Image (cartoon, rainbow, N blue to C red; front, side, top):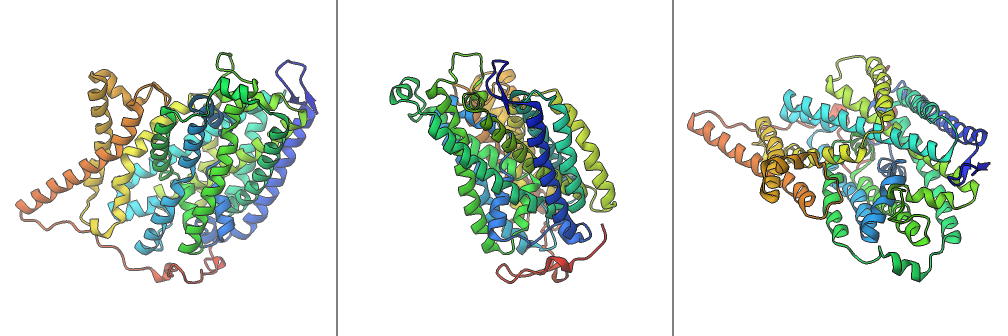
Length: 522
């Protein structure tokens, strides 16, 4: 099954790799089509799947939207740089945003139960200008997730198999596109739950194998370090929690799962269970970084980057472990890509205000896979792109979310827009003050120095972005209201629409409506 003749460690042979990859994909395709059979002619399930998921199904889906094959590179790298503290910081930051969705989700339901996405809410609350901005940013965010995932798949297939990575990468996109285009959000929810059960099983098996075969001595652990708390690890608790938390607010996959909970109580329990699963999985994968350093399969002075620490451990074990890793990677990739495709569909359909044929949006999502694959082939610096996107999210999300609060019904779309720009300006102003010159200060918006720096510039940027957005939001709102009063005009007040009983307005703890009640041809 394995071939290590190239000196790069145990690799899966071509025939075995093809069998493992394509058998896994065929199983997921069959599962997705079976799930989609229930939803492909049901507009409600296809677009929304509102109140369709139980606690455990939703918990697994919250894990699904948090994982992807990229974690096999990014998490061990954090462990090799920031040690155990960094691993736990990443694990906490990955799962903590789920509690925010558990709080914000019920606010949506009380606001208007017919709204099933953030973009629809933004349109209703703030109007078309911010609706376009938010919809475009959501689409770009999901597109970046897909590019990152495909870039990772390409790298893993290069490391573990002699195959040309392009072919299986394209087929993964084709398979996930088929069942998400056929069954919509509901098909993605069902397949993700099953995929996550398989992922958890594979990670448990891998953990047992590594624990049995890789046993660093206490002397090795003391020599390498990475155990004691570090300054960078402490900063990552703040930076990553802000970065990941605000960025998740632009990911339609999280909102789809939030609205898919049967009741608010189910949503709260799902957030708790989802956090526990995300935390455990993230810690187990992230600890392979320090473990590789302690066991000597990776060292800081080598030419191998810390992001490859996980695969240095795999290469030191039996060949069948590489096969297991290949199945795990394929499962993680399908889990992440079908979530992104369903989220992209929702973002695009909302962006056109649901005024075009669903089939046209399906075709658009299929076609968008082409530029995503092309970008992934160019192997961009995904971490750099992610950091810039996360900083943008930190600077722009709060002014939009605050529109949910009835006490802030005086906020106008111009106030929110001013707050978004203010968050960006605050980062540049902080950078100029901290670094001492305008050129370097405003280049902090690009975060070209990366995440792991020796000073506090990145920490300051992620802290000042949301604070600046709030200062500009309320300052502009105050000035606007003062000008309105001086001109003798009526003050703006947003009036929430009456509960839409026809759309299925039910109280949080009432039994959910039957998903099959919303019929319509797609």
